[in-house]
Amino acid sequence: MTKLLQWLLFGFIAVTTWLSLLMGMVPFHVSHRLKEVIWPMPVYAIIVFGCYSLIVIGYRVATFNDCVEASESLKKEVEEARKDLTKKGFKFN
Image (cartoon, rainbow, N blue to C red; front, side):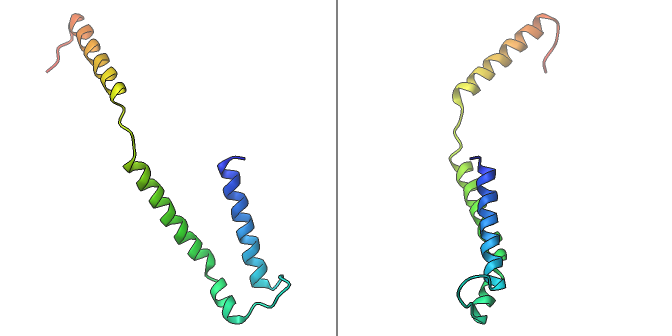
């Protein structure tokens, strides 16, 4: 199951549960005070999702690995290219 499918399934279940609670399709009575809490739940969910996303992005940026080997390899390739272009008459400043 892909991550997209997991998110879509979770969203479908959450929306279905939210609507069934609001429309009284559950086998128990939902009080008016509880409905006042249930109405803004999608807004709360968006805020929580935004906070979760910021935390995940921040964590991934903070733990981003340096690629020392790739950096050294790229520097070596740049030097080889400079030498090759210098032999062909290109001048670097």
